[in-house]
Amino acid sequence: MITLAAALAALCTAAAFLGRYWPLMELLCHFRFQYLIFLAFAAVAFLVIKARREAEVAGVFALANLAFVLPAFVPPKSAEAGPEYRAAVFNVHRSNSEYGLTRDFILESRADLAVLLEVDANWVTELSPLSEAYPYSIHLPRPDCYGVSIFSKYPAAVAPDKVGPEFRQFFTWFEVALPEGGLTMIAVHTYPPSSRYLHRARDFQLRELARLAASAKGDLLLLGDLNASPWSPRFRDLLEESGLGDSRRGFGVQPTWPSFYPWPMRVPIDHCLASEGMAILGRRVGPDLGSDHLPVIVDFAFARTGPSPISKSADN
Image (cartoon, rainbow, N blue to C red; front, top):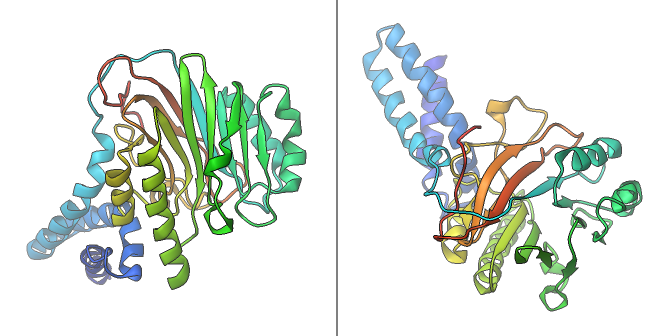
């Protein structure tokens, strides 16, 4: 049984390298972490039963996946940073009714900025008590899964010239006036690649995000549910074409979906990407709040010297 399972994991590992060319293969990219864990376990098991050749093959494929996963544990170069701020992003899941858990989380997280996705009119009503702590909140509810609420302790406004037609409402571009300077933030929720059409639509949206981020002036954070893992070739294209960096660097895999699966089975599809002028000081995944996603909390600052984001620790 373990031989068959290891062969399947190795086959999926190899097929994932074709993810740039076929949508189904691209979906296999998102499970690199799971392939790594299982194949490493299989290699050890084969050694125990003295199946040396099988152990070598499992080990090679485990290393192939490790090459994709390892960068998340390698911190970037350090740089001097200014005062620290905190941002949170959370896909609330529109049908989730645990409103109180989300309210408490935002307050207890002490976030300066919070982005909530899949917000409808009910969510806006239930979250209204937060307006005292977040006087510069912005609510753009929708009856589908693409509404957004932005809670801010600092003056914030949606950029009207960055709002596109219906298809492009997967993002919300807003500007925040922090004491240290202006910050552009893009809240994102792309389409799930659950069909050939939606897969192509999500890829188009990722290309649009890259173009928009590359055109931004000054410092930028992009936060949201990209429906893509860091191991997707489309995600890597987004980083390369936009010039943004992954805040996960140095803090581990930090998977967020689906929340009801055990930690090793989750996939990191909720992201915070930062421009070169931003320093990432901390990053962690929040608790289960009733959604199928887990929230992400990021501590950041404006980098005073050097262009590279930094991290204080590599805690997972």
